[in-house]
Image (cartoon, rainbow, N blue to C red; front, side, top):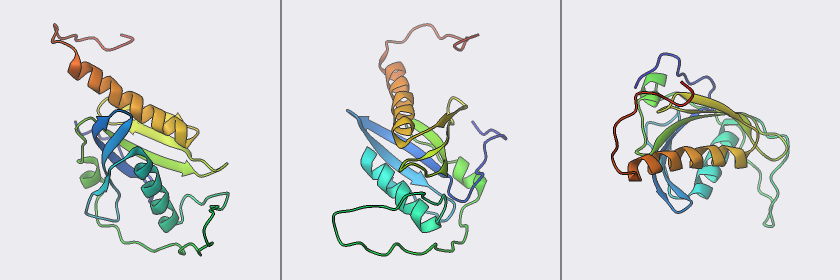
Length: 163
């Protein structure tokens, strides 16, 4: 499944491995180049919050709006210098049971994210314009995999869509 055109292009690129989908809840883990350990995520919301924490720690991409909260305003940590601990090849070797996605958030504008996502199993890359659109793409990919697994076995098709 290794492809030479898959790459980790920016310091904040993430490999998201989705292992379970229970209702609308996604569970799995994600990897980035600055940790050898997987960072587990137990819910869809946790995926977003952990990604946001990682981007804030990297200082990239820089948010165009500041975070607001009802609590006491705490100073955000300054950009943390990090040492790369995992190579691109190691990152790209990680896979989820239901899907594996390379998430490239290029901008954090208008209180949302913009970037590209690659679904590794299908070798498809799409742009997203918001966090909501990113989640919808991941959920629809995982649902596609679940539907195929739940269908009764039929004669295998050698033709992909659009051929």
